[in-house]
Length: 193
Image 1 (spheres, rainbow, N blue to C red):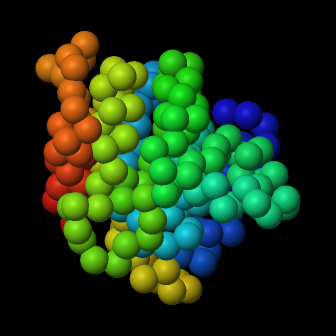
Image 2 (spheres, rainbow, N blue to C red):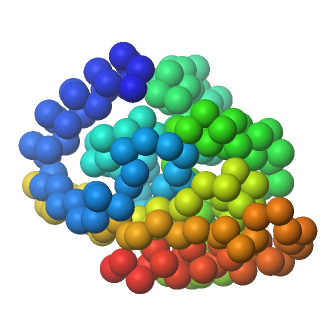
């Protein structure tokens, strides 16, 4: 874990565990080392921060490119290891960055719906999630965050068992196939409610 990430992890845990009550279940499902993709529902701008504090590994988040347009905020999220994604297009650069993160046996953090969502809709799943998992031969860990994010309220983080797509490694799949597999990931996330 890089020094700056460690520092933010320490300070964030001190501050946010006073403001919120964390309840994390299933932490044992996250491997202590090796490549893995964390896929979570997305209800608040605080979600990446909360996941980063709840999970004791350095998470490299795919983040909307708009965050990087602000010099201060862009510099901060970049220093924490995040990289930009264009949510309006098939962003090959973001896919390449994701594959590099996993090639280095790091943790990739993705919100499969691509934006904050208040109501469950499996159709929102982006096909790139399954594509990245299969190309990188990396397991997906589904995570469900439940919270109103009100001061002193509880944040529940339920971590599911790894999803493996071994049977698809090396196979030629269509965009629709990846979309269906990404929807399966979303179903796994919402099953953790």
